[in-house]
Image (cartoon, helix red, strand yellow):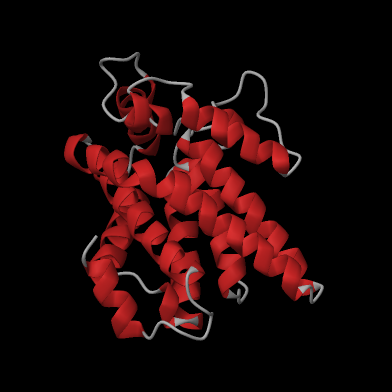
Length: 242
């Protein structure tokens, strides 16, 4: 894997997080990208990022849990069966009709107890400000997958600005990232991830929910501080609280 900087790693992580909420056996999205291959990409990306900056470090026990999942996939003699089982769990957690849904992946549910509420409309307006529209027949604007894809879009814009030396433009994009995380992600992600961790029958989803929650804490902290700040111990102690 080529050496990546912190910004490239963030882009990759958001792409991976969005992939986690696609059905694991969906061939159209690449089933291999939702099993061991996805875990391998995640682990490599996080390790690369940790090697670049202590600001990206996650708890060692969480990293080991991800490695354990990867080893289990690599040693699995029935990966097709495992993907089928994960697909069933994906449906149980995120797709079955309310009120039986275990972990509704919509911000509006946690704010108003329903789907397509004010949070969804707010997200749609925010996306429109950046010239984006939600694909017809796709996920709702406040679905976790859509929100992760939007943050990836902002990071891609930030990378272009950084590559072109546009400091002011990059700063504005970071402000949009922070604002979206503060006003939307942090309003519901902790409870959403907590539901997955408490109710999922599969370690795959429990560990990845924990990773997502920890990663978003780091994102929030790092966007609030200059790149040069946040010594390892300070960041590590903050993440230990999650």
